[in-house]
Amino acid sequence: MRTLTGIQRNITYYYLVVVGMFHLYVSFFGSFEAYLQRTIHLTLLLPMAFLLYPINKKNPAIQDRAPFYDFILAGISLLPGIYGIYYYEEIATRIRQVDPLTQTQIVFGVILLLSLLEATRRTVGWPLTLLALFFTSYMYLGQHFPGPMRSTPFGFEEVVEQIYLSDEGIFSMPLGVSATFIAIFLIFSGFVEKSGLGNYFKALAEAFAGRAVGGPAKIAVIASCLFGSISGSAVANVYSTGAFTIPLMKRIGYPPFFAGAVEAVASSGGQIMPPLMGAGAFIMAAFLAVPYSDIITAALLPALLYYFAVFMMVHFMAIKAGMKIMDDEDIPDKGVVLKKSYMAIPIVVLAVFLFAGNSAMMAGFLSIVTAWAVSMFNPGGRMFVREVMDAIYIGMKNLVMICIACATAGLVIGSVAMTGIGFKFVGAITLLSGSQPLVAVFLIIVVSVILGMGLPTTSAYILAAALCVPILTKFGFTGISAHLFVFYYAILSNITPPVALAAYAASSISGAPPNKTGFTAMGLGIIAFIIPVFFLYNTAYLLDGTPLQIGLAVVSGIAAVLFVAPAMIGHVKQHLVWWKRVAFFGLMILSLMPSLEVTITAVVAGMVLFVIEFRKPPKSNRAFREEEGLLPQG
Image (cartoon, rainbow, N blue to C red; front, top):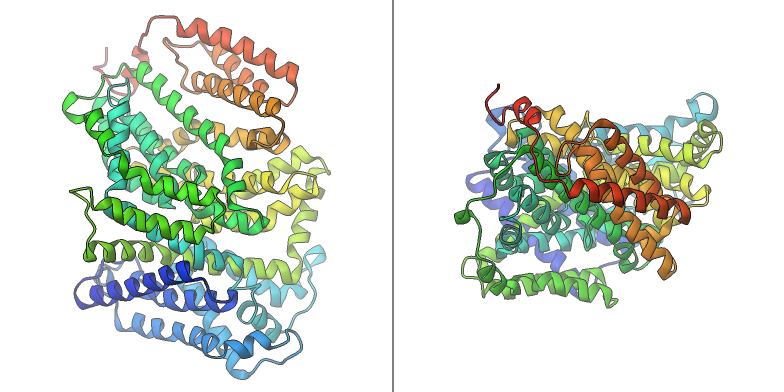
């Protein structure tokens, strides 16, 4: 993203503040009709992609200013939206596939498509651009594909109508979620940053985890858990909390690759942590047509187990590496931190109003007002007019990429709806799996991770849901478990080499090799690769079942975490020989099984082994410390 200066910076600043005020207005007074709201939203933000993102990121001459041709492109990109807004009633009352398109509509449809693809290339990158280009081309050229991939013939006008003049293309549900829920919660994220709530979360984590062994890593886990759900981006979370936690982890003895991996895993986990889940929960609720509270209730236990697993792994690694605790001067006083607990009121307000059945937009609006109010009691974060404008600007600047990604994902959804390619994909997976559900599940894991590579969480999930969820529901899995399943693996692409964006961002701070950081992050996040398979088959892990079933899921989940941490780190209080690590890993898998007898046996056996290892005196692994350069060789 450009760092604009001078008059260009002022123009974009005040423009985005006005755009943010529009979204605040509709969140309180109510949105326009869906197609109109989405058209206004995209029309306002699409030009910003050309002004804020350069055509070539390697050209230093255009990194702090937008050249004249970007202003021309921004102006051209406005035209299709202005037409759609001005002639909205005509578009809303026309009969699809009956009323012919005018020449003007065809021209503006093509302009919007080309502008959107170029904006996607600039903001998101080539992967989503090429994917959208393929699916869009398939609508028109699919009739020429061989064999099962051949689609029904569609004319050029029909394709333009689908992507431009309907709510099943660019202006489909993902853009609708961006225009309402995501917009208001990114503004809320800006208020969290400017009010000091993000710094309060960090201070809270430092006060209560700073004196523990491996404190900085535990601070990273806790702070990223608290802040990551709100931030909406794993990479942004890495840079915001990692800039502080990674150097601290290195300072007390964590190897650089491990410090980066911890931050990458903790930051990525924010996308699966209620209440906001990086805005993914809103899209999921819209896909499933269920209350928002159902999504965050189902997501709660797996997310807590994820962070508990990471927390235990960093604890055992701290013992393994023989680390010291943080210096007292770096740790805030608990009493002082607790006196400022009022800073968390906006999060409480958000949760209360959401669970009370209020609309997510109204809950977000009230949380923003509350964040502003509590800031006035925080001497270092009082928000006056300029700070309020800064918060809105931050939210809208971050919204540009998400808006573009959601609009582009709509091209894929439109193609799936028009051509039936989704059914062909279902058929292909079913054929490859031999109609065996478990085989299909593992094929979908691969597809979801690949779809998520290099993409923002929101668009990665939308694509995975459009293509993969129908396969899972065909095999009889519930809608909510299927959506959460693909959501997890789309997010885990952030820590899955070869395109592990969160891990690579963390490695740029830690100075460790990117791939080593990425593979270490995969190991730390291993529970997130495993537990979705089990909640697909046993919805008690999604808090859906009898009290006994849910209780057993909680116990077995906690036990699984206690077993997987030693298996991955190879240490509890002392070094574990290989067969004990294998035993812990096997018992972890067995403890998650839906069979009551198998689960109880595995939990009891694993706890006996864990207690035996836990009662041993702490002893660091000298060979590991020598290998990682944590003490002099020899």
